[in-house]
Length: 303
Image 1 (tube, one colour):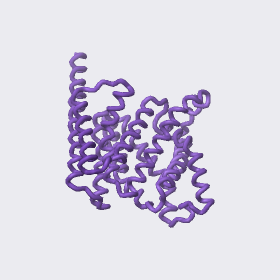
Image 2 (cartoon, rainbow, N blue to C red):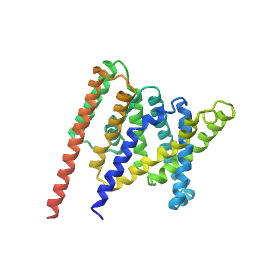
Image 3 (tube, rainbow, N blue to C red):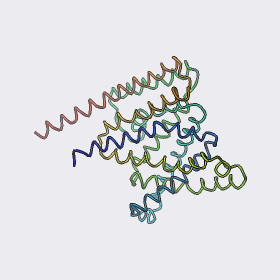
């Protein structure tokens, strides 16, 4: 049975990244709804789905420590609002015709995570890791000055998700419980926003077509399922494997943007992406090599 666990973990992680990769198609199908309204529905319906899931699995024990020490909630309030900001940028970017740039954000994200680890967790980078970050930074500068457009959507996504990961790294709850608490904190303002707009005839749910009426509630399921797949996979596979699989989602998003929605991807922009891809390639190879060397040293020490 133990031999099957990594295989199941890879399949779960792969499922999560495949679903995230095709996310743009889902959000594009309700692009007639403003991004901020989609965000509110995503929060509300996500919490409803998560509560059902918690009830089915009877995972309520985490609530007692929070009720006894309300200060433990503060980090999740911060991570929840950062996650909402990330979702808003992503939904707006996708529905405004910037799928290619949103994909760039998630290509950059692993390198941003490393940089934030240095700044806030005092982690030390190896020389090759610094080289990767420098090349990626060069790619951002190239896109800004040669392509003529500062990639604020990409950087906004990369840094917001990076800070989200940083806060969750030191959080006391697992993925399901943590996401449930974050959605609980965001639930009331999101619900009030929806009720206000619907009561004033400005909402999209009651006046929308069958597609809107169906896909807005399903956004809770769409949001939670890949996160649960990812949480399961992350526990079963190595960080190296997870690090390589993570490039599936932005690669698919890039292809969706270019081949399905025919977004512009000229040679100048491709060169900027090439900088990022080279940086990620160097970063990944160095990470695999370093992990292999570490395992070999451990094996020799145990002999």
